[in-house]
Image: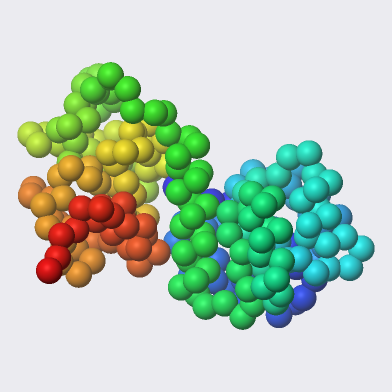
Length: 236
């Protein structure tokens, strides 16, 4: 899944740094920038925007005034040199609050929070249905969730690897991810989704799935490990 982003910040240096960080993050795509909220209104209405990086202190209209005045906004990550506004930001349900100067790792962690929220909103809840259907090689094939080990994306199609077969399907990784149960499948790389139940061991950034080994992308690593090990990792 890719999040389309815009930057709203009156400082050219700050916009440039955010642009560089977005380019370093494989699940973020910059689609526009604006010097203030007034200039950003058209961008939000005309573009498919998932996430806004919003500065607090700007002339004419500051970030909080913008949040209060807009009837609808995409997800927002606030950026500012003033940490004292963080509580106000979270009370307004922003995804995260980055205090300048912030590192690339801290930026990626904030982006991952937005990615997780987007994924949870779009995926259907787990239910009694245990399978789905896809068209592959001219046939409609049934895929049982518990038998699907991992998914690999290649250009405009994905390959589904199950316990006993491989299916090539003309879908995007974003398209199929939105249909998978959120509690069972997780994206671990820009081109891989895995079944959490099929991970037998972890070595560095490599997940052993039995029938294959899949590497985790740097920007996905923390969220994958947190979801996989949280409350389940016993150590002396």
